[in-house]
Length: 229
Image (tube, rainbow, N blue to C red; front, side, top):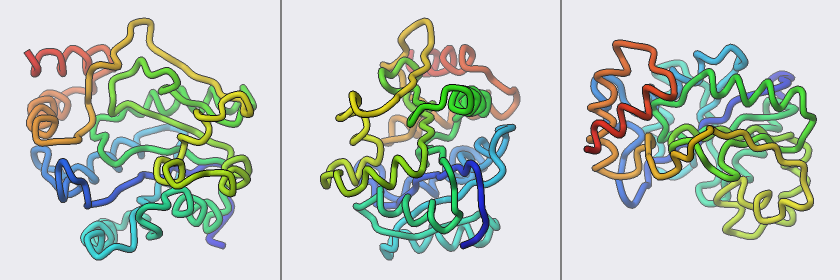
């Protein structure tokens, strides 16, 4: 046991992306992708502890070494059984609940994380999410899950659900209390995540604006529309 935490943030990261290999350490201007995500997460007023959860695969040695160099909390586990990797993190930190953030989200906004945490704390649900259904652009995804509920679900998850962590809950939504929050307009078709070379190119353009000004979600949406046009 490392400590006892009401809430931790788990940043899911790996190097073995088929569409953009080694993407977690790709530079988005002067910072790499992982460093940007970590920095944005810690701007949240609700997060005291962020852990980079990567795999034991040799490819992810680079993530581990980078995190150690930067004094980031890092945890290694199964590559494909991501649910087990998360459970190991939860148990290590004795976390009562956790926030899941994808490592490919360099512009994740801390106020969206804070909004999700506030909603989770007052609603008493199993899962708070902004992707069921999704109205925020990809790369602004936030999910908060009760740890006991997540651990209990593990024995029922199939391989696909273990790889995608929260898929089991959406596949079995009738069995759980899920609270979704959304934008007034659907921007699901936009992406602020980095999944391929095209996304990386756009992210580098957006970062030139983002690094000079604290953009809100509306301004971020305007920026991605602008660089895509």
